[in-house]
Image (cartoon, rainbow, N blue to C red; front, side, top):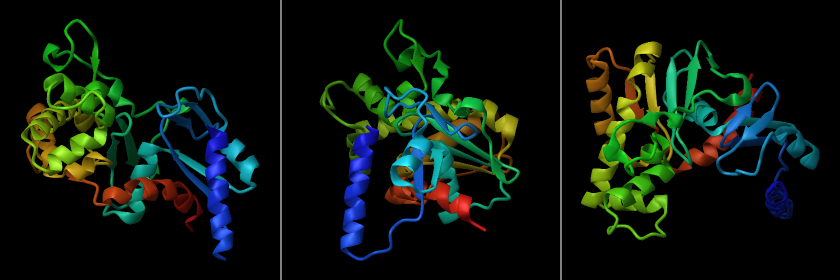
Length: 269
């Protein structure tokens, strides 16, 4: 896979040279999984399940002879909000990423929260106890209901005759944006489940902002409203006590902006 990534990068560099554009000075990476910023090791990744304890930063640096800056997708998404969104580096912010799994990034006192091994924020591993959310007798996790891949699985469980077996997560988005009632219903239920699981986090951190990241920011109020109502109900907090809850305004550009963010933040004076 690293060879494939390098091959695509080489093609891009050839196009850049052919068009007489400036060559890149750095490499900036947003990667899914447990990335340890202290050791620069990607311990595991849902997108690349065969990658175990990969020295991603050093391998890319050796391959292209450029400085490399890497962050996990959730952390990079939060950094993109700082650079291109509407939050301040003085805020206490929680950012939720949903693709391919649920991950939270936490920004407090001017810096990202991180732990050894890059394991923090993986709340998609929370077990759900409601038997109505999955196959009876099987353990159901938050990722199985409210991540991008899990939402499709949940939709097919709820309405097996409505979505084809070969459907992809983007099909749910298309259904919701076209006001398909089955899609709207499933998204609202998943949003409520997700919101209920945040009550301890909200009480424990009392953040200034809670941001819904890509791709569920594209659902707009179809996700935001039921999630916010579930947070208010489960926490018992008034609207004045709740964080500012909103969807990222970066839209479909979120992935590319989050990929740029690690280098821009690192090099910002």
